[in-house]
Image 1 (cartoon, rainbow, N blue to C red):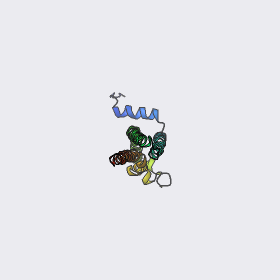
Image 2: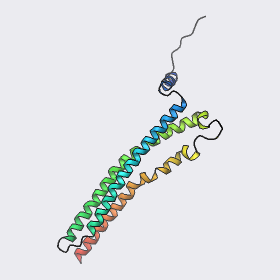
Image 3: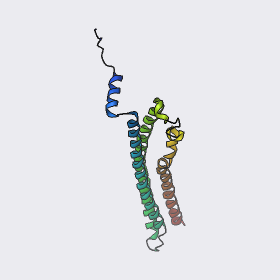
Image 4: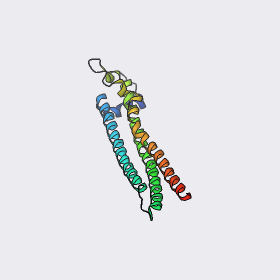
Length: 178
């Protein structure tokens, strides 16, 4: 009996490499979940560090504005409060890039997980026909809602620093004119 020899397609090679890397669909799902957990932890750590720095800057700003030394208090509160506002704005802009990068990586892994769950019907249902993951957990909007705070906090603080810097400059220049 003769055999027809054909070239292997790219799909066959991909399936073989996936089978080597992931023993089963469950292993692949576990890998995706661990990556999502790791990146979410990284995002949480970045957000916590950012909020800690911002809280320190807000306290320092308030303390500088409360300076009532008659000799140098006005110039000190003007210079320091504006410098702190600029520093707060710069740290917010720098934090945004790191937070956005983590968000995009999480988005990538959620897309892979979603494709696996939707592409493999046996992965999306458990043996008792109840869903393995809640609809909110496996849809696109669910995890994005959970990440809104981390994504919005740099923009909220950027706006705050612009307003506080403007307020500080305004009240000091009004006081100088009077």
